[in-house]
Amino acid sequence: MGNILLGLVPALMWGLQPLVMQKIGGKATNQQMGMSMGALLFSIGVMIFHRPDAWGMNLIIASLLCGVVWSFGQINQIKSFHIIGVSRAMPISTGTQLIGTSLVGVLYFHEWTRTMQFVLGISALVLFILGVSLTAFQEQAEEVSGKVNMKKGVIILLMSSAAFVLYAVIPRVAGINGWDAVFPQAIGMFLGSMLFCSFEKEPAIFGAKSFQNIVTGFFFAVANVAMMLSNEANGVALGFTLSQMNVIVATLGGMFILHETKTTKETKYTLGGLILVVAGGILIGLTK
Image (cartoon, rainbow, N blue to C red; front, top):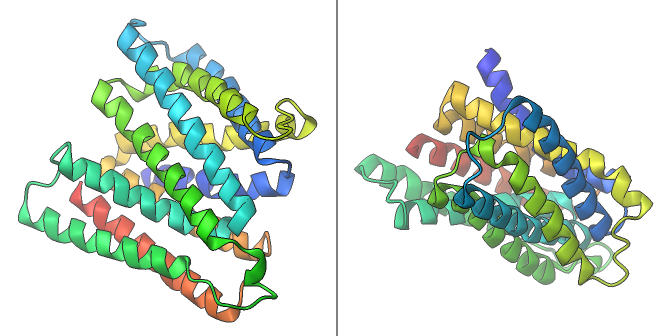
């Protein structure tokens, strides 16, 4: 039971992260810098308890690159929150990331070798596509949907998801340990965030809201560490599946805590899409 609860920590923390971020407020740049600063501070604490046996160039370069790629994915995800809302963005973000990582796993790492893995995996991909399509549904109601630019939001989310997939793939390709990468990766996140935020209009990189959003970085970092501990305790299949439940927390939180406006039909479609994405996540977990 304790291991299952541990596995649910990433789901809770990653699910609450966008909700807390939107409650604190600020520009996308403030939220991005706050997250990266919080992650960096947390990584310094991790360094007290765990240091790599050797600081090889492979570890340093791969971790820094990983952090920079994450910062690109994260700032675009945050932008999507401002454009279409958390409850619309999170199922699309999670679904497209799962599609991307699954395809990379199959085509590059050759993870699926048995017939049942292909059956479960292809079924999961179908569920993801259907779920994302339902979530992206927008009813033509000017008083509600006229303020939501779904096309722009989805395009930004696709760029974000591509970066997050690369963020997940780099450590595996480089063969680096997750614990060893925590600190140099956080440095890459911070530097990458400064870089991408500097391209925005009036970024206010170190404004008051940036420092307030440091707490969102702690949410991310705690989830990241809990995910590694969960994978060790529960195995990758169960740990991964449990972590994907963050989409439930974020989506329902966006609707009922942030009070994001939807028509009745859009709400039904979003909930239906959410169920399909979660079901797909469970099936993908079974292939591991």
